[in-house]
Image 1 (cartoon, rainbow, N blue to C red):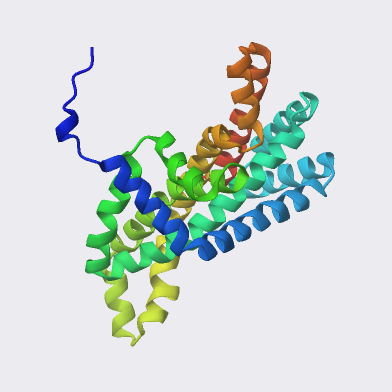
Image 2: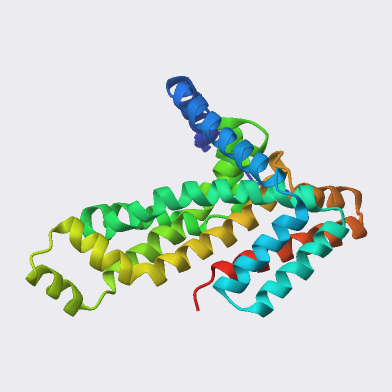
Length: 275
């Protein structure tokens, strides 16, 4: 039995609906331009990745993993990607990877400069911190609602929701990397007459790079998890197969698609992670 007080109910839903309609009307050009930019990035990355033959792609990525990390990781890349190819999931994996690259690049381009600003300006930090707290505490499915309202169905709103979800780690870890620099370094730079930009590029960013790279790693992992969830609003890739398996109770399809997601996550994590 539901208990309601109809005469005292606040019209929150109606207010939000009117606000959304007003935003769509006022910023329709900006929304369309941003949507077109995101769509173009997804298409370009997808075309570039699909142009590389699978075996060459596997060989190059394995060599990269070997040079950056260890030969064991390179061997794991070869074996796991050959398994993805054998399962017939290659095209879906490339679609997923294109969306992850798009979301990660946008998040990093916005997040790292914003992290630098918050580290150098207390007012901006006070404003941004509660927003990041809010972004990191709301359930992941809630991110899909505004993306769906403003951008409709498809890969573009899924990637935009992913950007919002994956943005906090680059901001926070860039901020921490700069704020945790030893005071001796900053004092030495100032003593040598370095200006703000020289301090930033020659002292702060190089020494904060491990923390920044950790933020990028977390951004990639969160992008992967959100891209899968975004299949609920029409995002393609491996997430779409997971949703199909849930809808049809297809255990075989769900296991294979889930395994493809795990493999992609492990490869990206092993290559990007800072030890």
